[in-house]
Structure formats: structure tokens, C-alpha cells
Length: 183
Image (cartoon, rainbow, N blue to C red; front, side, top):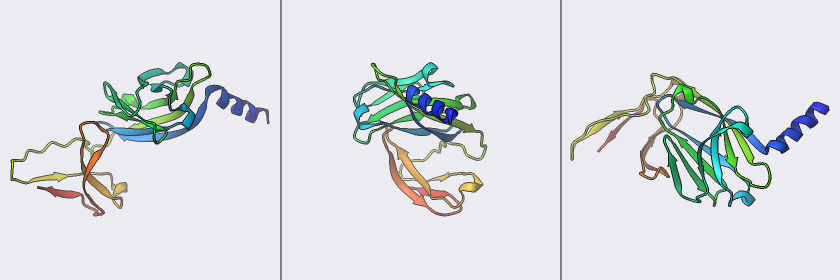
């Protein structure tokens, strides 16, 4: 009973809301969604790395609302209408693996945190960036490789917008082979 009480007290002291795991692939990109309470909309949001929330090092931080902020390979967008902020990490490496924290800065009381465990896998079959050359009026064939355990999942092909907010939908398929012809 005493151990349970200590765990509950620590959760309140650190402001930890929850935790979750995210898996990415070396060379690829992950998008992490960090939810917060409505009353925290006006506070600064940040994403930091470290074993403990109170000693983590900021990777990116912003007080801007509904605007993308970029810092190196990290981007953050605070969506106040949805009560969440999202963090994008590009060009993942195995060194990115570890414990991160979604943080809401509260100047007078302990910050709110959500723990994120990032696992970065090496997978030769899944190159995340493909470059093909095509000429105006011509065709380009783009082959999308994926792990065998994703065989029955829907595959998407889209174009990322310049502001990182959206991926403009182009085509999807439920085929076991993911070969798209784009004109």
C-alpha cells in the first residue's frame, strides 16, 4: 500500500500525465502527438530528452500557437484547437533512441509531462527517402518497400507540403505489392 501511495505522489509531483512508445526507422521521420488539458493552452510547449523530466534537455520549445517552429531536425506545432502539439523528428538515427518528454511550461507550479519512449530501428528494406527523375509529360515509377509484417496494411503515397502541416493525399492501396505509377 505504501509503494502505491509513493508512485501516485511522484506522478503528481512530476506532473506526468501518461507515457507511450513510438517506433521510427533510421533515416525516416516520426510524428509525435502530445496532448494537454484545455487550461494549458496558453502555456509554452516543449519537447526534451533525458531519463528524468526535471533534468531533460530541450530539443525544441515554443510559445507560439498554431504556427510551425523549426529547430534543426525538430519541428513543433501547437494545435490549440485540438489541445495537442505535435513534434516531427526528421532523419532519425539510432542515437535518437531514448526517453523524451512532452512538456507544458507552468511557471508557478510543476510542469506537466508526458513520457515518450522512442525506439529507432534499422531496417534495410525501408528506405524512407526515394529520389526519381521524371521529365515533363513523362512517367515515373516509384517502388515503396515495407516490412513483411505490414503486408496487409493500407499503403499511402502523398506529397508533403512545404509547411509540414499536411501530406497532400494522392493515392492509397491495399495491395500486397506497393507499386504506384504517377503521371
